[in-house]
Image (cartoon, rainbow, N blue to C red; front, side, top):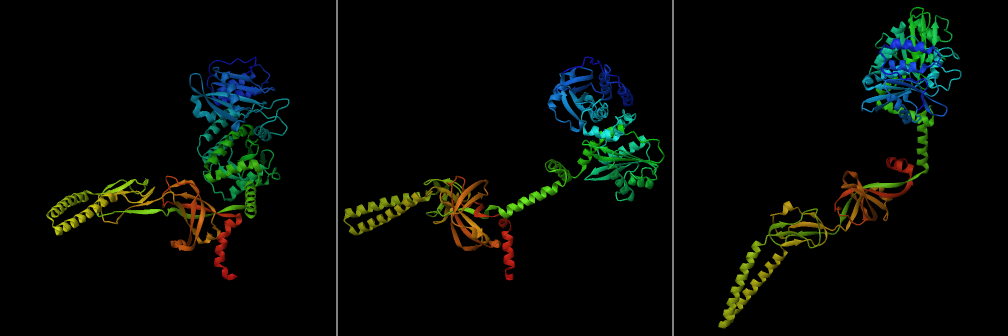
Amino acid sequence: MNRPADFQPPAGNPAPRDASSVIRDLTALRRQPRERLGYWNDYCTLLRELCRAASALLVVRDAGGEWRLQGGSAGDDWALRHWPAALAARAGQPLDKGFAVAPLQDDSGRLRMLALVQVTGLADALLVIDIPESERPQLNELLMRAMLVADVGAEAPAAPAASATSTALAKFSGTPGEPAPPADSDTGALFDLTAQVVAEQQFGAAALVLVNGLAAHYGATQVALGWRRDGAVRAVALSHVDRFERNTEQVQLLEEAFMEALGQSCPVWLDGDAAEATAPVLARVARSLGMARMYALPVPDATGACGAVLLFGFADARPAAPAPRALLQSMGFLQPWLEAQRGRERWWGLRLRDWTTGRLGRWLGPRRVWTRVAVATLSLLLLFAVFGSWDYRIEASAQLTTDSTRLISAQFDGRVDQVQATAGDVVKAGAPLAALDTRELRQQQLDLGAERQRLGAEADKARAAGNLADLGIAQARAAQADARLARIGQYLAQAQTVAPFDGVLVAGERKDLLNAPVKKGDNLFRIARIDGLYVEIMVPERDVRFIHPGAHGELRLLGRPDETIGFTLATVIPVAQVKGQEGNHFLVKGRLDAAPQGWWRPGMSGIVLLDGGRQNVAWILTHRLVDSLRMKLWWLG
């Protein structure tokens, strides 16, 4: 960082004065030569006072690309130490709307705002303004003040390339080829008006405050503001009128005058009929409104193009037109602010369209952007549809099915005493499922055991007595008891039901079976094998012609829509089945490509996409419509 030899930053804060007094001092300072020792220090002192800033610095970039301090006025050295870092953070990027603000914390933790403002009239120059946190509510107004006095005048002998705003300002401020005059004496009053405008929250209210303030300041009978949108200029505000009808003859005539002013190379000052040849519409407006003199001022935006038009009407013959320089400086700040305010109030769809149009315009040019995009897009889509091909996929409903199922039923009458599994459980072969109550069977087993012992004793007694008849009877009864004991033993062995193979229980709820009485043959469970699952697909009749065994497909189950299961078509059942109001469907079976997963269950449903082969894109998009028309119009031959 380089400092000028004459740089002496004054201590303390300057005594507060009104803006008009500071503007007068700035105007007087501009008449002095820049080569005077301390000129830029005095300029920064007045700027600091005008913006109520802690510090105000002027920095310029030399031929080697290094920034150096040209002049300044500082209450402390914080801004002197931090302005190089703020410039380095910008890295040569253009300042948004002519300024940028960076909130920073000083050494004591207080929030301070370091503003960078572009300077017009010096090559590669910036104003660095340290605005305290206490002035944050008035930040917009203070920045506006800095931008209005940032034009330090043309640099002699040869000025560098100017920005679009400065070029437009020179274009409309006086006679082409002449240097720009000093700041107008009414700059202070325009400060106050600009502050009133930016205090409004709505575009319409702000525009009304602007035209009424200009009318009062310049003594105009009527001031109208026209705003450019989509190539046309529409009246948005009329002084002394809260509302107006757009379709009235007077408003339409004003809008024609706005358009006429856009085509002029400088402001139009109409005095009687003298300039009617150059501005016939403006002359008609003057006669229609009964104005002695008319003044039309195109307002350039940041790009140099005219985005708004101010139209002044004076009932009396004024000696001169309003001085345009201060007015253009004020509008140079207000025009982008009003444009942004108007844009925020538009419907979000229009804002999205304008944003997209702006981005596309940078790539395709500013004219007929949407037409070019639409034509190019439609042409590409048409070429792709005619000559391109795509994998035709057939959508159908499906479910997981298995043929390996078995019913497990009760082996004798009784009551379910224990239930170890329920529907949905995955079980291994031999795993216990349920047990019947065996207390009554065991009591019968004890009774039959006792009777068997008694019959054995009777047989021994008859044998000892040699009574063959009684011996035969006792032996027959003992055999009968043995048979009954064997049957009870078989029932006891079958009281515990087990899984016959590895699988999943698809029927049999624990809450329904526990303590429930059952008869012999009643179903307790239904078990199905998981490793025997396959896919059953119901293909609509209109698409069955594209289905062939061996084709590949993808299945997505409702339980896991994020996972894709591949399969291969195995069999097409050649008999149609009626599926409600959906018409005829054909049953198709597919083999799963992957090994069964633990969460698969028989009966799970989902959607499949079947490979129908490579087809033309246009045919894919239109074949169903064409087939429907053929069915309805087949009689035409």
